[in-house]
Length: 99
Image (cartoon, rainbow, N blue to C red; front, top):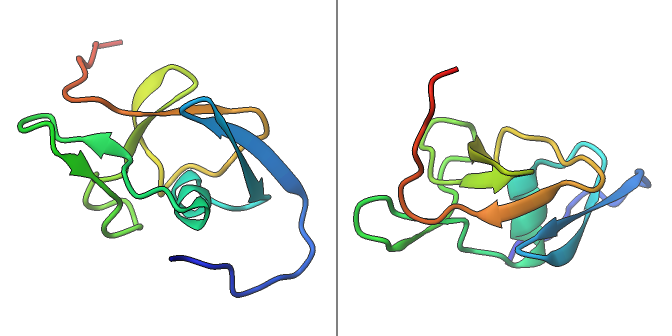
């Protein structure tokens, strides 16, 4: 289980993950806030459908892909929490559309 080491006062933010409320501190990444909450499944493998979780937490492995505010393929470890954001697990392969 993850826990916060530094307990200084920061602005508290809230967002939803799979429809459930999650509290975070200003500056937290989505992955950090979800791990602190006890979440361990962020997405499903595009190939096998197996559950996947964050691995490197520095943007290299892409195991933490989630959907944020309707936008798929977002790296939870690289996105800072914003008040009111809606985060969902990414399920299987997602079609990527060219701009």
